[in-house]
Image (cartoon, rainbow, N blue to C red; front, side, top):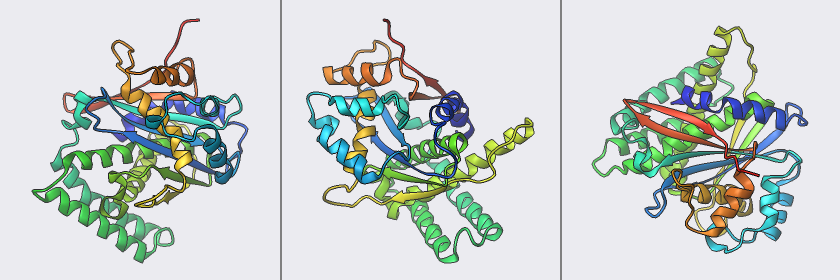
Length: 323
């Protein structure tokens, strides 16, 4: 799935590199994500990521969004113009990639079966141990041991009779999607660091946020796969990868970056409601976001995921409207 996702985002990645060209390498960047998963009234499951350029401080961005969009999509009737303008600003400040699966795909159940997810755990631990031997300064022994502990707890759950397989698939899919976004940004702008701000969700909290460890493994594996392919084709790739930083959402109360999360919230909620066959939406507010953010936009991309015949396929899509 990892090379498939990188291939599917190839055009989006080149567009992103051109869009963010004004920002030199070595800057810290932010990625905010939100998810609309498991809503029986929606035709799609969606993972949305908004890449935010280092154009201002997080506090100032939060202040702006709080003023222009004080509510999330679920609790608002009218789409705030200021939020739409921020997501479609002609000055390069954001770029989004949303991953969409039809509900009938059941989170790629045919591909991500429990046996495969269980087998991945010892492989991930072996990979981390390999990197610890190669780069001892990169991951301290104490941090490594804590990571292994979380993976083993995840493995025990995967082997138990009380397994929530749906949640486990969500974790793998979000980790793979986020790794793809981070690697795309790394190739496009060579950032010094990437900070991931996720919405509060069960898939984030599980096993002391093991999803961040899973994402790190996917991030490194995908980067190595991509680099190997590029080198074999005679092309060069960046020699360094951005450091990943993970914001741990508070378990209760207000999310300290709740305003920033509203950016992907509006995207995920809209795409979850979209009937891709008829292009119909259940409410006018979703039409507003679709037509004013996604249609005729080269900076708000959609990646459709499908499974069949034992493999996963993916394709990027842009919505075009008539004048």
